[in-house]
Image 1 (tube, rainbow over the protein chains, first blue to last red):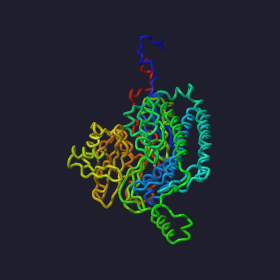
Image 2 (tube, each protein chain N blue to C red; image 1 turned 120 degrees about the vertical axis):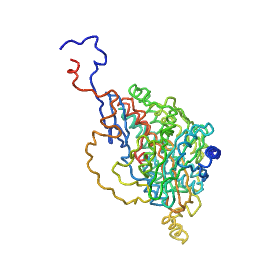
Image 3 (cartoon, each protein chain N blue to C red; image 1 turned 90 degrees about the horizontal axis):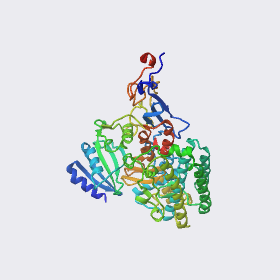
Image 4 (cartoon, rainbow over the protein chains, first blue to last red; image 1 turned 60 degrees about the horizontal axis):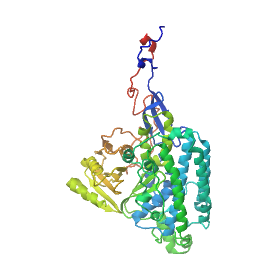
Length: 404
Length: 191
């Protein structure tokens, strides 16, 4: 064999290669949730990507058309099973918007506090799982510990740790327990302490920084056109938070900041979530101070709210009310409405159509992470395989929500 | 605020805006399917509307009505902080003629939402770049969110997919090699 000629062209020296197809998922150890990403690789660079979802499709919208409005709550819980309380509140608000009722002030504060606790949970899981997928296992344990503190509060309040089914149209299933405020006042500093400790492990870690900084960059215009909302949109610099833009419940009474990023990369998405945990804690502290200690939780309307059990067993009116609501369902006026709340991942919308009966005609959920994951293809094309993991992690895809 | 948008739409498109309404604080415009994309373009680019946030596309099935399906789209403006709901009525009782222009050229985010709508209702979005099913599998029979699809319906078993590993949508073996396919006979070529 003759020796290599120095005048040989550069391209001829390259090793021959052909594109390789790589199947990531549906069940991949570095991905939370079941999603399949078909990649076409040139070397380690991704030339084409196809994100395929639907592995957790359970027909949520069809199931909702078969029960009463109240019976939707357990299904709604299982959409975003990381922060079910926010879904509960979102759906309850949507139906209440159609009914034209407003829950008592005490209940509004109660919903805000429980919802913000759920949001902290959501962000903890997202950031913890994201760092775990990048090899940092300890921060995940710190986040899981912090989540445990919140879950204990939820267990005490609702009786369930994960899927509470605690929301009701026109109120909540139970009033706050006597120890409600004390539990949160003692639990919240522990959560924030763990969040700080978790940050100490990550924010100056060169391995972590190299994998998130400047990776998965998206522009503000693209994020808007893709329908992104929540932390993923705010990381690009658009300060859109529904709690601020269209205040619902009592969010207009609190002093809180909307953290925004600058570049829209994984780092910004991570930091937006971290900061939102602190802002949620601020909201909770203010809400605890403002929340009245006594007063009704449910609205006073026997057509919407179940009567007390005592009345059901002792009075004929109570029995009839109970029977009507359980057997026929709450009669929601005919029409349609789109109600939106700020869930953990962004704008959780419910587009409800009612024909005036006790059963929803159509329940459409607009899941925030469905839009986020649809933009994943754009972010990872041209990137490397290791970039897929943090980029996907920072989207915070929740299978139940994304796949309906 | 968005009442004004409805006025603007009526001024711009005239009779093609079939009806407008406001219920529960949501402003709705029913438009002719033929101008579906033009309306979205107008709402996005007109400085008085600036509907630059894509929110949602879905459909609702009304078997008793003619046209039977309603395609529903929600848009929002980041700067102006207003929202609008657009609707277009398509399809007859047998669900024929379920066609509407795709909004993907206007909003990138419409891609998956339209695929889902296609999956669940069988609406064909004209001009959509990648009209596959998204939540269900290719062999699924019917469109489950239509009212005439029984909730208890069972689906036939899917045959083993021959060659499913080498031909994965949307790119098959014959496309997607940007630098051309090279042979492994490297030495024989250069020597």
